[in-house]
Amino acid sequence: MFMQKPIDPKKIKSRQSIYLKEPYFPQEFIKKYKALLGSEWEEFFSTIKQEKENTFWVNTNKATIEEVKKSLKEKGVEINQLPYHNQAFTTTHPKPSNLEEYESGKISLQEKASMLPAIALNPNKGSTVFDTCAAPGMKTIQLSNMVEETGSVLATELNDKRHSLLDNIVSKFNCKNVKTKRIDFRNIKRNKKFDFVLLDAPCSSEGLIRKQREALIEWSPAMVRKKAANQKNLIAKSFDYVKEGGEMIYSTCSFAPEENEEVVMDLLSKRKNATVVPIKIEGLKIRKNDLCENCVRLFPQDNDTQQFFLAKIKKETK
Ligand SMILES: C[S@@+](CC[C@H](N)C(=O)[O-])C[C@H]1O[C@@H](n2cnc3c(N)ncnc32)[C@H](O)[C@@H]1O
Image (tube, rainbow, N blue to C red; front, top):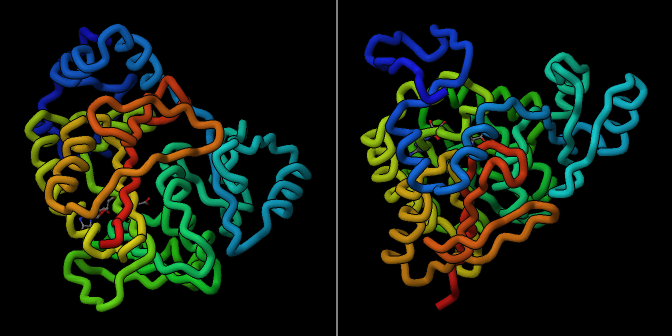
């Protein structure tokens, strides 16, 4: 693995246009994570080279958990509920996108770690939620389920094509309590703040390497720095939409401290009423974070997930 020929990202038309037999790791990425992970680097790299079990979320806008369990059982599809949430499942089915339950929107296909931001935010029934960076909308479905008919979700997306994807998802998964807008979320004008805010931030996407072998082709330390500068602005703006006493989640599928702990600490230095509060999710191994208290860095080898980062931030009342 560590003798791979370097790939020049400038010579690639698009990530989709190339085929790789094995995941590609830039030399600088390997160097960085060997230094950061110490004795755990081998386990980390061997885990992120492996493919994962398929996972899905039961969309209660279309069916109950029992209905989905029953129809999959009748087809002989093996499933197992994850301890994190009663709507989260793993399956040994090789292609769940072929299932009628997916076609009809009764289940959505979502990576295990990617389900966690909404689970950690856990907005209650009837609450207002702002999903600031929403497309394609996998977490929007979860939020829509959680707040039920009496709650509402505003889902914004900057990019035109991705906003269309978001609209399709909202319609397919019957998210009647979701309103979408194609806009830079920082320009939303609103007098009333939200009970809950999710910032699933645009990032260097390091965690995608477990499902896309080419995910790291455009990765570079400069790219990570650029993403981090943007994230520092996005997190402060997201926090400003949280009402007093309310909570937000900041999440990325990156492992880089620059895009994660440093971003959260930047917010704490700018907003004195921001506190990072503990995240507890049944069955999820969470390590103590020495860089930023209560921030959650998910090591892929701990829970068989992609690399992921989560922080739950509360807006204290003055
Ligand atoms: C990590 S993806 C979100 C994935 C999504 N939460 C999901 O679970 O399906 C980040 C998204 O944020 C969008 N984005 C970036 N900056 C934005 C901004 N200022 N306002 C709204 N959307 C933005 C990007 O176009 C991208 O689609």
